[in-house]
Amino acid sequence: MAELWIDSEGEIVSGDAVFDPWRFTWEDGEAQEHRELRGINARDALRHLHETAPMRRLPVGVIGPREATHGQCAIAETLGRELANLGLTLLCGGKGGVMEAVCRGHAEAGGLPIGLLPDEDWRAANDYVAIPIATGIGNARNAIIARACFAMIAVGGGYGTLSEIAFGLHYGRLVLTLDAAPDVEGAIRCMDIDEALDRLAARVFSRETVAMPPA
Image 1 (tube, one colour):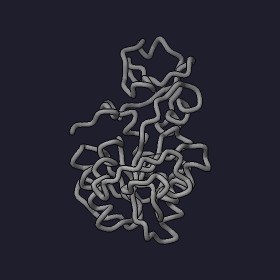
Image 2 (image 1 turned 90 degrees about the vertical axis):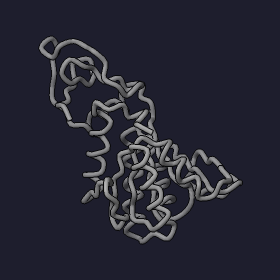
Image 3 (image 1 turned 45 degrees about the horizontal axis):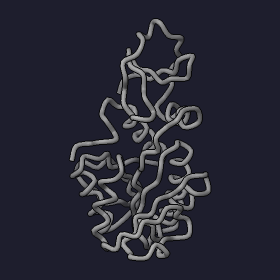
Image 4 (image 1 turned 180 degrees about the vertical axis):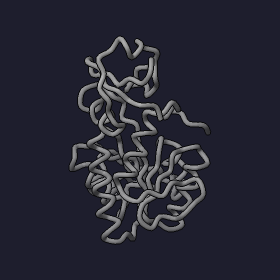
């Protein structure tokens, strides 16, 4: 990834390009030598845009088991909080375990977690889902979660999580894994939440179009 800079007007620049936080694309701008710049890392750049600019809230999918361990729930809750602090929307399956924990962290940090439910009734969502979407299609909703987000983070998981990872990789998404998530070729195992967030932020500012990855 190219080096990132913040200019005196608060824009994020790289080379001769300026980052558009609504389109999530790089646009032609002034050459660096005509700007007063200071270096910034990707996470701080994303947080800066969240706090200062109109930024489209792209969804990040967080997946994991309903029968989660205490440690997995703790990871998920912290992850949800940090995603909200970066201005990213949470998309998950809306049920219990990892899903409930990540929604709790996201909601308590001011986010509006989206729950894409397998059920026909939105009331089946956990108490922290702000936007429940009842699909009525059962586990087939796993493919929709993978298709709708620009990146996915798995915290633990079994066969259901494995299917979501596979869908994410098939759709060309960045797929990151934490804790005891299934090992799948193409998914990137992260040592901790900080590594996952750093990789996620780096993808936002990559030269790829994160809003419309390849199908």
